[in-house]
Length: 260
Image (cartoon, rainbow, N blue to C red; front, side, top):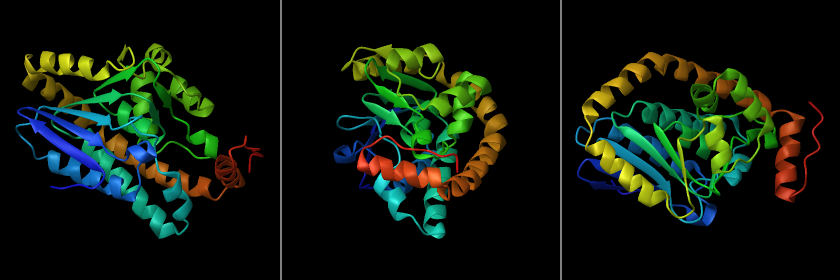
């Protein structure tokens, strides 16, 4: 299948999915969200691919949801359509019958960070900019961000990281348990290649059975979290703090939040 914003290449049991909006730091617009959802749903039926690597073209993994898309989705139905694509994407990704690896360089923020930490294994370069930074525009994480943060660091720490919205480098994220390995800048691809070779020479079918047991057990919770994120995000989009956060972002100034 031909895609406009992503590219899927295959090499025997390994597939590589590249996010291809480098001019926008691979920010996810409506087209990319739908293409990712379609791609992951199609990959659910793949029996030959055992590893999927996700990476970004250009300067970043993904800067998150496209701000222009968020500004233009003022109608409730348009917003529901976007959130539906996000839910489809993350549910399909979580159920993939293969080992997933996020190869992170540059920015992995917001929804882009949710996708990265949803992977089975996250490799980040030292000076990556990793952030669950929805709070900066008065919103909450989506794309199952609450679920995947809790899976990696526990509820107490997840709340603190989400509320702070701090931009983390690779080492900081590693120390918190948000990524699994940190490499020097420019060396992520080499590390991933070595790691995939190691997995492919392992009893990978047993590894995939373990993944299926855990993920099948947790799938109903992910569904519930995605539904709650939709409900809460609609509520947050109607707050004065969200409008101020977006305005401040566009005007490149610090926001003045008032708790309303």
